[in-house]
Image 1 (cartoon, rainbow, N blue to C red):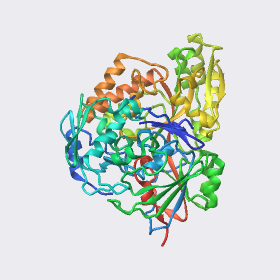
Image 2 (cartoon, rainbow, N blue to C red):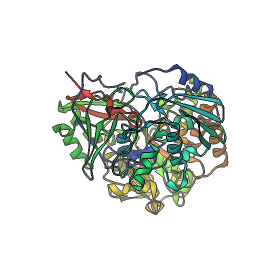
Image 3 (cartoon, one colour):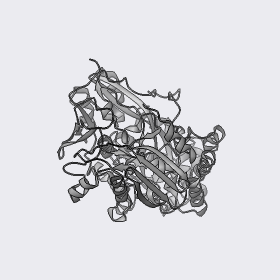
Image 4 (cartoon, helix red, strand yellow):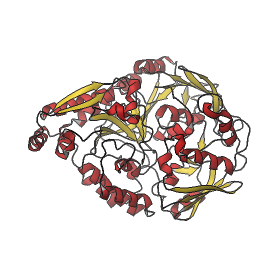
Length: 574
């Protein structure tokens, strides 16, 4: 799911925009509106043609020759255990209830406490999680065989009843789950054995099994959730199965996780993990430099050079599956003419933005999806997804002619901006500059960081706003995670775009079991979305993580949103 950060990945603030899904605080449901090897599960996925989709991005990653960063596959493995480490996060989660975990702060913490049926690995592949095997005997059936002897934090043993209950909470419309739309094709979830759950689909769905590796597939104790009642997710135990359990939550300050000694898998290397809330980007950076915080993800882009030169630790970049975009939220005014949208895209200085807004750590793009998300596609299909798109190069004169032809010279547009991070503010300013050069009047509307997230959830907050910066991250390694956003009625289809041909092709792609055919349909969708400039794509943005000299082991990829990454962190030296 998007995850969508407003800052910059769909809601990240100061290095914390929000993504799928949305970086800056993240939009709850930007979705279709969201190193062990196992041969059996892969074979099972192959039956539905999902192997390619779950294959992950190209191995050994890299960056463009004109960029100021290099992708790392990971960080050095921990040399031993530690008593504790402290992690800086840009905001306090409003809840840790898994059905509402749709943004960076919540998922960064929750991924270490609650586990899903399947697991997203640091390599962005899919592997068994609480289900040791997943099979699909036919296109409308998925069978999950659960691990035996898995214990919840409060002492109970996981059973099929807990899975049925946990997925049922996601599906119940009354709960308003952020991941509800990912269950739109689910007919029923039933217990078919003490440790077996069967999911029946209304129609074939290539996306559903992939989302079972995200927060959509989390399994919590039925007894624990019912006991907590309305307090679940905000106080007391989360009663999940992860390598850490929820400890003390000091509201407004920090959340402490404690190692769970009854964990079924490899035990966490740290006895405790403390997440400290530092909403100010400078304060977050200073905490990492001083040692007050041992590390953090979503590093403020303006701090990249300072952290790299500090000698206090190492700044790593990894695959992020994230694109920085300008979300078109209204087509009622000048943006209702596609020529105006095309002109703004053509006049935008993407390279200047990458340098000033992303600290040089990014690559310009005219595609809504990252290249890595197409790693499982045949070469010809992969090429077709990008080769037919417009050049990302700036051409102000051509853009100005488009505005004149559209009769839009002098028309006004409003772009939301915020101090949430320089990626957000710089991009908003870049759009204003582009519009001014081609004859438009672009005004900026400044929104407080805490209120910026409302742009994703509250239509009233978007009133009078035509566009805003959004960093979008994919929660699965499939381009449909992003491209489904433009179907009629989709959660993040704020501008109300509706096209029957687009909807039909999206449904065809979702139902397609043949990876080559599915990617081919996705390539067509990307071309349609590009032609209509439904959002303005700007840059691909890697994941950034800083570790001081005391710790190591954290994954460099965006897998940390759904993988128990904190369990891998330990001492950098014995």
